[in-house]
Image 1 (cartoon, helix red, strand yellow):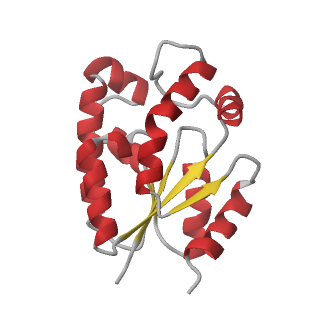
Image 2 (spheres, helix red, strand yellow):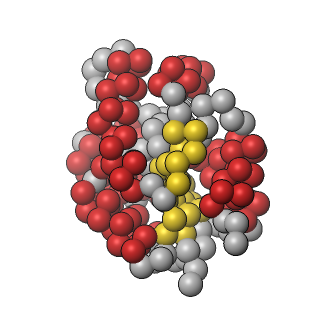
Length: 177
């Protein structure tokens, strides 16, 4: 049976960068869920979508796109950092795992490294709290990490690992026959 590889973790952990390289090495399509969700809105940035429609509209679209994406097989999918916290998305992912259609990898990264990466490349990421970046990252990680642990088939620490090394290590850990 064909299986999708789902990468999850906090913003800045490298889901997209590692995911693209992993997909290349596995010769599979790479799907950036946030890009697909953004394409369902008229606005050109996640910031704008959240400002105009709110987080709830984003999360609803995220769930719809996740479900549609998981209809296909043999993809490497970078989930949005918040995708697994949507209860229906979590149930969808777990159902895919039980059916043998998804392997979920949690890319762990130390809070200080996440903050450093986000300061270097903030990207199109709306604030999730009103706190400073360190407090926000620590608070969001504390909120989401139990769900990440619960769903993960494999956890891999990317704090001090280059994307190429991480992708190769994931192949060894997750895809050895």
